[in-house]
Structure formats: structure tokens, C-alpha cells
Image 1 (cartoon, rainbow, N blue to C red):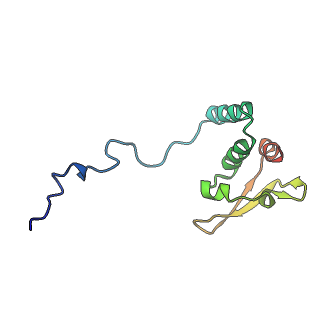
Image 2: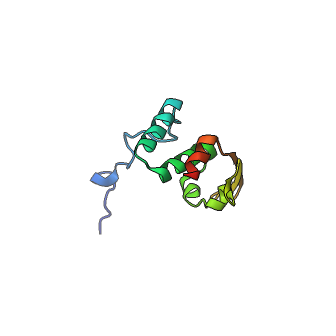
Length: 107
């Protein structure tokens, strides 16, 4: 039997050929506020709270959706600082919860 030559097959091109790879650039302050305003106008309270927590904490998405109310609140009051254990690195991350984020989480 003759082995297939992979260089001539049409699927030998890499999946990311011609695409920009690597870390994406961070949001600009203007873009962050534009997203916040659009989420507020659309009354997407949960999405706004998650977005604000993501900006404050710089956590990965899997860590954000795993957050519980008890992680950012104690009883009826919201915390000013929170500590979350990252799933990937198992390291604790301490972050400050800003006033707009506390308002979004409270809502």
C-alpha cells in the first residue's frame, strides 16, 4: 500500500493560516463604557453584573460564571473586596468591587 502524501491533500493547510493569533488587545475605556451603557439600556442586569465583575477582577470566564452571591456578598451587604480561587491555577485572586459593580450586582 502506498501512504498518502499529506502535503498534497487539501486539508493540510493550518486552521489559523492568515488569521491573527495571540493575545487580543484590551478594551479601551470608551469601549467599556459603551458596553455598560448598552447593557443598561437593554435591561440585561445579569450580563451587566458579570461584565462589571469581569472588568474589576480580570478573572477568566469559567471563574466568573462559577461565582456565587456569597462570594461577593455577606448577608444583605455587598463586600468591598472579594477573594476567589482560580480554577486553572488554584491561586486566590483578591479584587476590589467598585461602586458601579456593587449597584449592578445588587440589582
